[in-house]
Image (cartoon, rainbow over all chains, first blue to last red; front, top):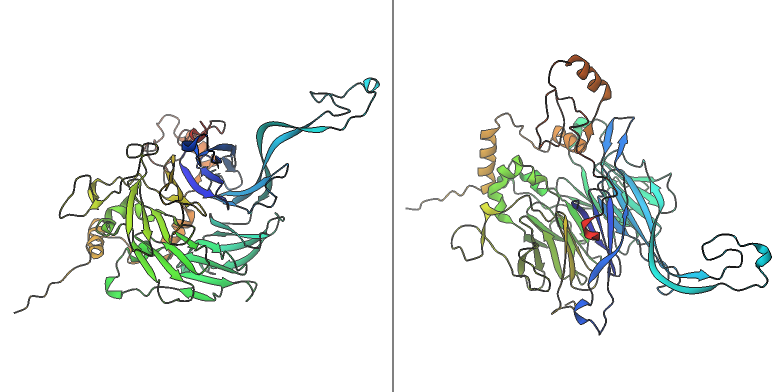
Length: 430
Length: 98
């Protein structure tokens, strides 16, 4: 199997989509809970798989375009749940092309046509003596995925994020230097809303690393930079949002500045809270919570793996210092989660200020077993089962994680394996 | 008498290590060269013209082989179709679906 490159729940949490480096999308569906099989309740099973992107070769530029899917985003479901055809629409993009897919369920089929027989062949009309009304008969569930739109050629550089607007009509895509606004129904045009490309590329000092629309205000979006700053932009202010409405930046302590400072401050992911009041950012060593009303510094900072500070030299040499970790909020914005190395992932409870390190690996998790908290020891007393910093496996990185929108269910992508963990004890959000 | 403890931040220690290994490393990592390299990252180039000329020139010699674990094919090495990573056929079922 290929390395998983993105994980995303849909808006109800019923569906979970994963994309991989081979351009394949696998969608899981949660089984409805039933009294007959209490142990199977709420488990995710494969619902549909399809090939989103094929490997391509750009003949004009002699460039190989990889088919890896960078991100998947769901559109809110438009149709009522009990109609004949329920549809879900999902985005996927890789490199520079964005595709919109429509997923349709069919569980009934019409039978008793007048002009066609059971196999679809035209009937001999002389044999038709009476008219019948076709009836809908149940059939085995069939899931069809069709590409509905292909938004191509909007970007010169690699797309790093897409975000669907709360107006459900537009979405934005961001690459290293530009952000474009698209209409879901229009594929041949997009509006450029941010452009930070300098006239002279020698003057380039920072790039865009991630961006997201505000969950409720369709005019607001945020984008993060490689220098660790966040810019909140208001599309009502002007057509080109090069000038930010708010700039969120934590002042740097000049005495602590080192060669690595800028690299480790680069924001790899930014996520608005469900409430819309806060933003969560992930840089190499920390996750930070920012209050939209305070630009001067984050309101909370959590150390993900501060022990790596004394390993920065080798992490720079093996390129790990450039790893882009994602971060996630739980449904009630009380807990935040992010991945780390050695297949570890971390959760921080904002209210109790407690944190935990857990591991996603076959050896440590049998089905339905409770996950044991892990600990990295940094010298001093070493407890049994502790892992020392030097034994951490830096090839086992958890970059992609997702949290169910309302329940305590998380999806963790560990290289080419997907783990889904449920908190059965505390299934209600606090 | 008070002894002043000078604590050097671990980051600065690491920086010194790096500079010792790579003395020609630039002062600022965030410079435009660095960022421009980042913009190019992930692209693999194949030039059929270079490839054919190299093949013709080195008829009797072995083409320099790329290191097996190298993912980037750059510099003097002319990429050959064998060097570019194998494409997985798209019909292979994902293990997740199994």
